Image (cartoon, rainbow, N blue to C red; front, side, top):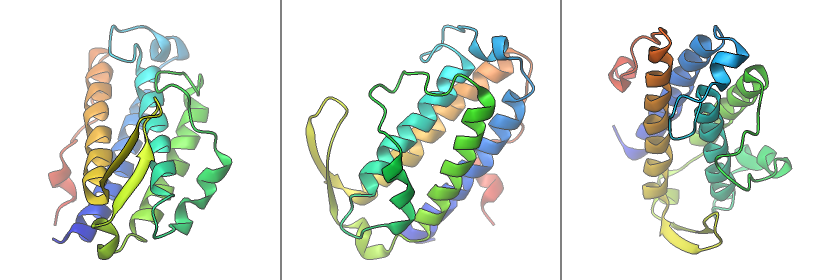
Length: 175
């Protein structure tokens, strides 16, 4: 598997896992979703919001790549979050709609990435305004790893309320 195939696999894994998480989360009441569970982002809803906001921030950065990914153009209409802890979506249904849209955007964009793009550096500023200049492929690895990390937290929170999202291993998607 080459790097481009790996990116496409990770985009598909992202969508597959998010569907599983949201299917489980949608069985809970708003109160259960919002309950502070002493997790890093407080609640199940807070954790899912963080994932969506983090993805939005990174994709907006990726949209500035010299390759000019037109698949990411719809993000221009979305304001960048000011804080990755904010509850941008207080309703799981609104968040699920945004998540599904974002996941399809990620897949469309992943299919637009080309091998030479991966070796370029991306210039961006973090949320505190600190400038950075990093290899694009490394940032993509971080992007997908960040998703997996916080989905692991979300699956733990869901299991604490008795919900099992089932298989979560990437291995399930590898031929």
